[in-house]
Structures are given as structure tokens and as C-alpha cells.
Image (cartoon, rainbow, N blue to C red):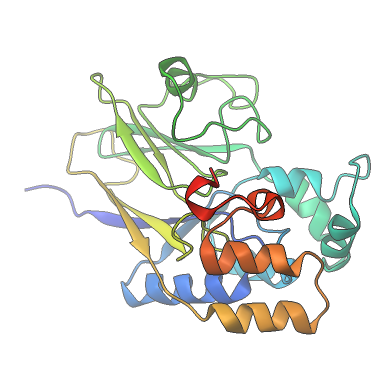
Length: 259
């Protein structure tokens, strides 16, 4: 018989959208999943970064650094007016907590070496999209100064692009993107990942990755953002209602071409 399997919930890119986060956590709870790991980007874009950080610190056993988490509290970053608004919403000490988060998290699961990080093995600011080439795929499994030394992973989960996907090569190297809880692109429904296996085990055992979409009250989130005078509200509405990235929205690019 196989050892008892366990499910881990992987969330990412909440971006201050507390309404979506609460809906996703309620779904996780309803499934009886108690372990939640967060791949970063708690803040920016949405109005409630402070509350999102507080809730994730309470509920997530692992929190990982995202690009917004690194840049927004950085005193040397060239902040826009909107950036300064999002930064002002944070409680004292939250910016330092964000910038102090670990870059990556490694563990064994069902005989596979799993590594989680936000954007790429190189940096939280280096983006690798779903339409990458083979060299980019292989680079995601490399040890770098950012990830540190250790066993090279055979499974890598990351976030950042807000586009969930799953890919396996002939050597069983598995790369997947969790998508986004608070700012999902294309299909704007929040998405998270359930990873099932035997954690901390180097023995081969069943292993699976499942994507879960969770509907929520989009208009309630947008109403709150408007009520507090959040900047770039129209861009936020475009992303939450239609899954159209704000830069494409500003350029008037049709939804099917927003990538």
C-alpha cells in the first residue's frame, strides 16, 4: 500500500484582492486542505494589500517573495502615483516583511524534488511566459545564486505571469504555473493549484497537480476599490471582469490579443 497522500494548496498573485483570496481560502477549507503555500505578489493592483498580508501570514505556512513585494517597498524604486497609494495602504513593518521573504522553497514529494519560486530561477523580476523556448524551460530547473545550491529540482512551480499551465519533458521534468488568485488573465476566475503526494518522502508514490477555479463576487471587490479612491480603477476592472491586462487595456487591444 502507498503511504497516505496529502494535499497542499499553492496560491499566488493575490495583488490586494481580498475578496478573491477569501473565496479561494474558503474553497481550500471546504476540501479539508490545511497546508497553504504562497508564491508571492501579495500587493499592488488591488486595494487591500495590508489585509492580504495579514491573512496570508496567518494562513500560509510558506510565503515567497514576488516582484511587487520586492519593488513596491523599495525606497530606491521609481514609484508612480499609484505605487505610492498602494504602499501607503501597508501597515508599519509590512514592507520590510515583504522584502525579507525567501526567494524559493524546496521540498521532496513522492520521490520528486519540488522547487517553488515566483518568476524564474534567476530573479523575481525575470519573466518566463507559457510560450517559452527549450532553453528557458531548462533554465527554470537550474541552481542559481538566487536559489542557492542543493539538489536540482525535477518539479518546479512558479507564478508571476497570471497564466496557469502544466508541461512535462521526456526526462519527467515538470514545470507548472499556478496562475493568479487575485488578478487572473484570460479567464479572470481566480485559480490555484492542489499538489497531491507524499510530502517529505524520497520514495516514488502517486503524484498529481490539479488546477482549481473559484468564482467570487467581482463587483463587490470593484465597489470597495472605488469607494476608497484606488487609482487605476478602470484598469483593475478590465483585469477582474475581462482578464485583459491593464497595459493592453490602455492601448485598446482587443481581449483575444492581450497577450
